Length: 442
Image (cartoon, rainbow, N blue to C red; front, side, top):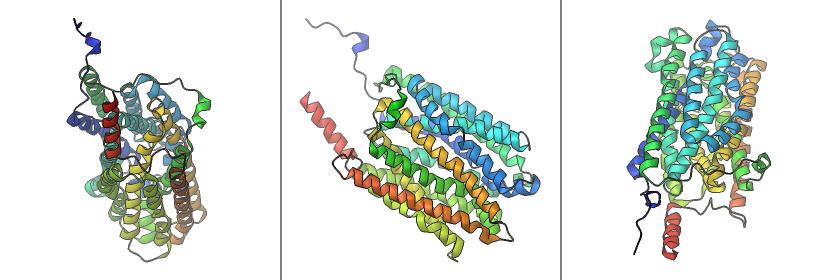
């Protein structure tokens, strides 16, 4: 006689596709608020200079100090995620984002504003790691690259709105503080999205078969340097690629105004083109990679696109729309492939730590290059009177683009050799075939 199964042994169905995508949208709202707050500084860079007397070094500091605590914090954040779970970590980091945004907007004192950006940075990068870990858990082996692309599209809509705020919120730009107050309101989504995600994850845990989120390995710090070689090539690509993008955007609107004579509105639009292209093409590139693989090869060509764009803006009369569109395509392609690639290189129980370590090293670059570009602009006298002073920074960015291409080439070489981890070969179809074969053998 067959005994009845215990309730704990009942096989539950996996979460429905619609539910998984609803989770993605909700958790991406937290990223939307995060990205908006980060990019709220760039459109007011000239106002900070005129109304508060800030130098380019001061402006660079506001974004550099965002990255400074994350040289350590995101690694700790990744470990926290692996230990307490995504839902608790996401809420904790979302609250820090909101508090940091509020403090930044509260006063004109540089020290207080920088402290606010520091607190925001502590939460923001760890929030990104938490959301990335959640998506890897919900979509690994399914539409992972497309899911990452969709997440980045929603998040970058926050950047797009922030960079275009001189147009849709033009009256607010009479005073440096008003745009920052808008960023506080939008930043509240970091908390709202985290709370709703908590509710949805709890509901899913009761009704569906979920991954073993609570079973993680004990973190041994020596093991941080035992990740596979391919992982480290991805990390080096990450730090060089993002250091060529985000520090550029810190000064982009100011550069377009002073170096090319644009209005603030058009300068903000040009800077936002990077984000606009990424919003449209990142999911499409993710969908393509899910179907064909060749991840390292795609990252190579995406990195190569960055090499000429800065020198085009510094030395040629090519319409600014052209190099900015090239940057937008690169910014769509590389992140769409790079972040999900880690999920294929590192086991699930160490994903939070792996993403944290990767983001930590990325923030070393962002901190250093935000400070370096601010120094380079001041050293060369970059201003409306001396637009050629921006050329030194453009050379720095071009060199970073070349280094990104080099590391992507090394990754491609590794992933086409005997120690490949599947970045060039794993596709949705191959995953489904492997799962079907495993079921047939049971």
